[in-house]
Image (tube, rainbow, N blue to C red):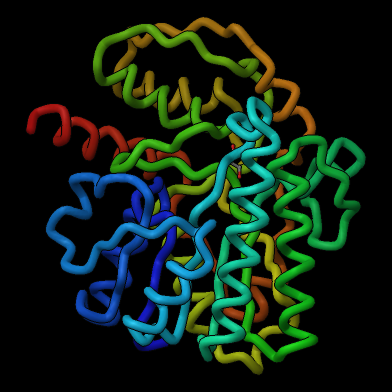
Length: 315
Ligand code: SER
């Protein structure tokens, strides 16, 4: 991995991933792409170009011109937005991935890495310590595209020898770029409302547990998986887990710092999505194969989130 192209670089994960990859490989070796305008965090980053992942010709041209040997394909529509427009979610998530796979195969890209999600599971999967090979019967279009995407990665690996890699992320909590259209977005909203001194109306129940991870761990996970020697990997897709949290857990942790933070719970259609997902994942294969370990628990994450958001609000 020497020259990488990142799709969805303006997104919650993409924007921080580009910065980290720039530090690792040199900014000149990272091409950030998206259909959106670059957020503040990316403004100073050298290489940014418009790329619509649905346009296979544009995709191939950027890969060839940049001489990319790896693609981090981060562009996707998340679960809640996907339920508002399932056909668009299908198009962006499936055609976008198919274009990424085809451009990799045809233009000699060595590695394609792309996130999967806890959304691959449905109501029939065990709720706790869910393993990779548990039943995959998602009830969202987002989940359906992630299951199909995982299978496509496996297919391209078997059929064409492409080095495809993926990890099932839990909900990601971060302070830099807001998430958009996910079911787990409430976790990020809680911190911003608390620091702005505003009450929050939470769209999931107080006691519904979901798997979460703090952004520095999410970035570490995808980079460590990308850097892992191919011979150590026994699968294409790995679960990664950090902490199982309810909205109530996050609120309690925020109230240790901001005691008068007020929250009311008004579950909407996103509660049903949350109910269909596990509360915790078993990530033993990632721990074994590429020594995955999260650094952040709830308290350390809350302290860091509050510090970062405070700095952003005073800028
Ligand atoms: N955070 C994502 C979502 O809520 C799950 O992958 O859609």
